[in-house]
Length: 318
Ligand code: NAD
Ligand code: UDP
Image (cartoon, rainbow, N blue to C red; front, side, top):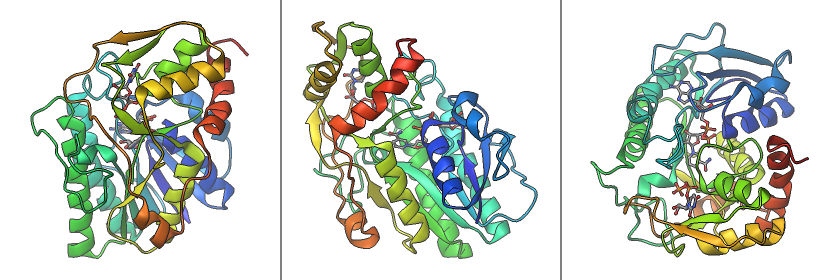
């Protein structure tokens, strides 16, 4: 297949590009570098199976030549207001990438009679009142709250994707991605893993927001990419959760990172997040298990050990 990946210079987009090229496909990457980096795709430049367009997906997209699939991953993705790369600080760009970007990429898929896959998110569940989160749960999003620019854009994107499927017969897929980590995350984007692992490797106190009792379930990037590719090859049109169902508190997560990095510094409790920080999050992955035969294989310790060398190299410690 010849596959367009938007957000190809980002964390997930670059891993997906690598994997799809390895599987024998040609990848057309597209990115405007708003949160991604040239370094993430530097190794692909010059590869005959990779071409790249610098372009903002919120504007009309034209890609010469036939495409067989379109994977829409372009969007800011960090919720940390302290980071300039966070969607809080790119609110209009975030809504445009989710709304106009999804409209434009669906248009490309329709024109090419290509398969389409939308990168959605566990954030569409908001601060969930149902736990763990099944795909049938409609969510608890505060429409005007601080995270709404991301959550509502992704909810709109899902609805628009299904509208194109139902009205135009576009062959669509929707993946709801839960917290994922691994090499090529931006050390400065403020998400939990980059913040805490960077602090630990520098021997600093880990910043735990609130009392650290809020939970997340962290998935290693290779597992996530495997699930996404299975979904792409399937014929499932309704949303599928992909994430690791092992849930832990942020406090436990921070302690694990300290243990693996031998960091002796104390934890630092800071009041850095809005009251809208989701308190519990864990995917119900029954649909992924039954429809895709997928479940994660890499446990947290192994995933962190695979991620640490990248962070050390970025910090000049390797
Ligand atoms: P990332 O910031 O590393 O990658 C996003 C990429 O999209 C960046 O390279 C950025 O420059 C690009 N981009 C943003 N707006 C653009 C635009 N208008 N035009 C062109 N390019 C644009 O983040 P990521 O973690 O790789 O996330 C990728 C996708 O996966 C996002 O859609 C995100 O919502 C989704 N997602 C990620 C996670 C996760 O845990 N990593 C969880 C849920 C959903
Ligand atoms: N968090 C934290 N310290 C940090 C960064 C994040 O305690 O330095 C917490 C944050 O409050 C949230 C969780 O870690 O409860 C996951 O945050 P992340 O930004 O990775 O993504 P989210 O799951 O909130 O979208």
